Each structure stands twice: as C-alpha cells, then as structure tokens.
Image (tube, rainbow, N blue to C red; front, side, top):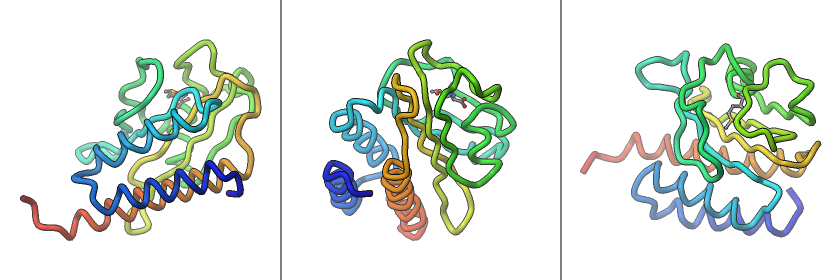
Length: 163
Ligand code: SME
C-alpha cells in the first residue's frame, strides 16, 4: 500500500470511523471518498451477508452506476467466489471469467475483498474498473486495510449498547 492516496484514504476512514454513528455511515463515507480520490475505481460498493440468510450477499452503500445485482447467492459471481474462498479475488479481464456477473458493459476488471468480523467473513468490498488489469498488489493491500477497518468497526459496534 504505497501510493500516497491510499495512505491518506486509510487515515481518513480511520478518523471517520472513530465517530461514525453506524456502519452505513462509515460505508457511505468510504465509497464516496474512494470514488473521489481514485478515478480508475469506477464502481465501488459493499455487499454484506444477509443476517437472515448467510448464503446471500445484499448490496449496501455504493458509488457508481446502479446495478441489478442487489442480492447475489454466494455460489455466484466474483462476489460469491470471494466469500466462498474467504480471500481477495482479482480478475484482470472480466470477459474471460465465466463467474463474472455483468453490472456495466464498460467494466473490464474487478477486485473483491472480504470483510471479516471475529474471524468470519461478513461481507465484502467490490470494485470495478473500466481499465483492464487495473488492480495490483498495492490496490489489494489498500483494500484489505479498508476491509479490516470496517471489520473492526462491526466488532466494536456489537459491544455498544443500542441507543
Ligand atoms: N461483478 C460482480 C457483480 C456485482 S457488480 O460488479 C456491481 C460479480 O461478478 O459478482
């Protein structure tokens, strides 16, 4: 994670997290900041496992074109693969990956990074780019850091009394 923008975004998310009122606020802040600072991240969004159906991902806050994929079974898509494997999935050319569920005809590459709380996958960050092979090891490190910050927030929110 060496690009200066990555470091700055992680610091800003960490700072916002310390006073975020809830998970949706933190996720909304994150997708908007990423979209503003990283022009090749053309669609940025969260999918979280449905608390009532852990075999299905549900679309959360996102920035970019609306998608028809508001619920994705964990057996489908690049999004499902990241949950099933429990690790980051990078696809350099979505047109050559049969798992890919299309959101936009402009998308060329995708990265999906699981979010863990108490060691278990609870959701993921999904990014699409209009560029081929847009995501390398630095993007992966940056997004895994973002996913850890969100996972820690989820763990800490569970300890707070509901107001
Ligand atoms: N491409 C994803 C579906 C979600 S959209 O990118 C927003 C997939 O293959 O799972």
